[in-house]
Structures are given as C-alpha cells and as structure tokens.
Length: 168
Image 1 (cartoon, rainbow, N blue to C red):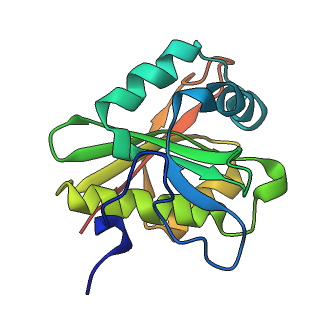
Image 2: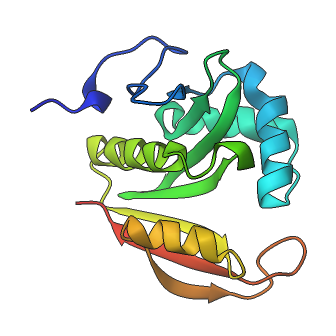
C-alpha cells in the first residue's frame, strides 16, 4: 500500500487529497506569511517577526504544511521542526475559527505524522496552553499525552503543557 505522503509533488502543489471539503494541503510559500501571522495572532495570541516563518521553513520544508481554500488562501497551518535526532516538534498549529471542526486540523496532523514516519522520527512533541482544553482534547485523540507543566511558558505568563507521543 502506498501512502499519499510518499507521492512526489512540486512545491506549491496540493500534497493531500482534497476529500469531501474544498480545503487542500500544500507546502508553505513565502507569500503565506501575512495570512499565517494573522492566524497566529488570532488563534495563538502570539506575534512573531515574519523572518521566523521563512527561516523555520528552511529547516524542514515538508514539516510546514498549509491548509488552503480553493483560492489558495491559507486557512490553517502546522509548522513542525526536527531539531533533536529522532524527534519532531510541532512549533505552531492553528486553523481559522471559520474552518474549525471540519477536519482541516485532523488532515494537517495526520499528514504531519505521516511525514514524521517517512523521516523515521520516533517521537513527536508540542506545547499547548493549559487553558486550551479544546486543543488538549484534539491532541489526545492523536495519542499525545501531557509529559510536563511549563510554568510561565507563554509571552503573557500563562502556563503550558508539554505533550508527546510515539511515532510508530
């Protein structure tokens, strides 16, 4: 059986089947930054210099997934890195409010985990605000569990949880 993530693709082309909805997945492109930055501000309540997205996209291009509408406008994303041998880390992950609960986040996470397997990574980690119970439940459905409390982790002083899972 062949995994869809194994299929060769051109940069910017869809990398996951559209399925029943109009949202497709593709790799990050430089012109995505303003929309991604707004999604980060709205959903994650954080603000980062635009150069961060560009530099992180270079470390593992296949780990920076964009969920885009039919006009190719980003409506969500997952930015993953692999800075520790054998391990992936979800640095940022968000879907616009209007596109939540439609499977977009699940497709992003499923594709990311498939790409982790393709790189033979055996662990995935992430951080989440302790108050974000919806995200914690979402991650738990994908096999993540809380491994640590991160006191004052976020820029506003809120605590975070570190969550992890094996990538078989």
